[in-house]
Length: 230
Image (tube, rainbow, N blue to C red):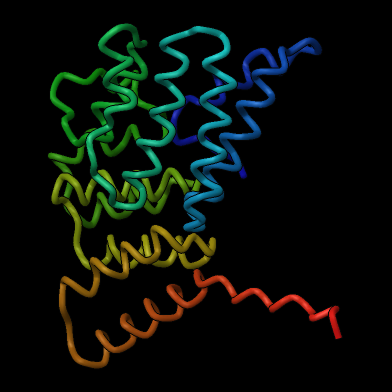
């Protein structure tokens, strides 16, 4: 999976371009990728384990800003799944040390864009920075034009947070999450669709899709061990 929705690659892969990249960079990149996959798939325990591994690998450097950067990875994925809980893991570290780019990204995903330098926001979100002057149709077009599906969901989550969305915005998010098999964001966007209401047939389809996704998250019961005493 190509993760480009925050400048994580510049931190984790910058030195990997050479032949003597330190092990922590490889470990952090691998664990961060696993975290992204597990989180979006709705595998909570595996996601948390992978995030802890990624954070630990970066923390080994003692670099406060770098660990804050990893925390932003988690915050971005939360926004992609419409989880707007405070990004405390980042803000606590940012109070000590951060970078201008990370600070801009943190404010961007929070929906508070006042005073943000657009040049510091990841390029794939650049066109959205003018959302206040765009129609909803243009906002939707700009989101769909984002090539990376994770980034597309992050952008959608931000616009939902800002209240700049409509039925087409939600349907596009449902479509991308469904195509990728990302159960966590799929459930949240289907749930939001359900709350928006509609005719009985549409709501029945949404409810059926939610049930299917929820069923896919259930683990099959373990088979009882064979009785070897007989």
